[in-house]
Length: 200
Image (tube, rainbow, N blue to C red; front, top):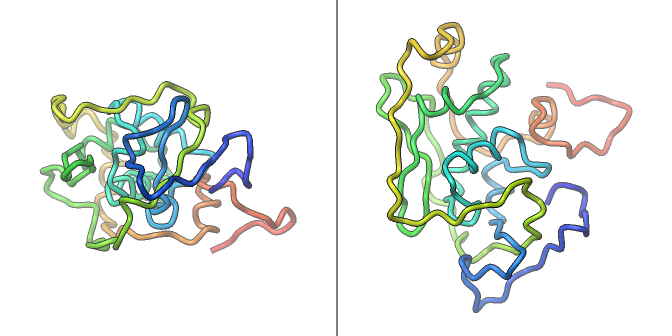
């Protein structure tokens, strides 16, 4: 999963008769596809954690494509030399319902950061596991489906114009990124080669 099989988080595979909202006390649910497709890694990035806390939503409620957009935005910011912020994220993406799940979809901006993405992930809804809630440094909220979804998008004047110009010029495909790129950008700590550094 990430932290090199840290057993203190008590990860447990679920039975076939369990649903993601039947989490045992003291645990949260994580989808396998969030790690395989969405570029999620533990230790979780501060940006991802800030987003979950801000939107008051749990890992087990987010469609992997939605979480992939969050990590994609972080990768794009860091590759462009900027720290990601929720203010800038809200300019390009907004929380939305996707069936029984939540996702992040493109907001109504004149330039879309996403050129394309995988449209189907196959079977993912029943592929999850429980892990100790201590893996997240705050109390994770299971968002009620009827809570009002969105806030106003920030205007151009509220954003760094240099950042805004740089990030809008490189729309690209949302996809799993190679591990060495995630390590270089500080999103992943999964590097088993202490002597050589990852390179592009």
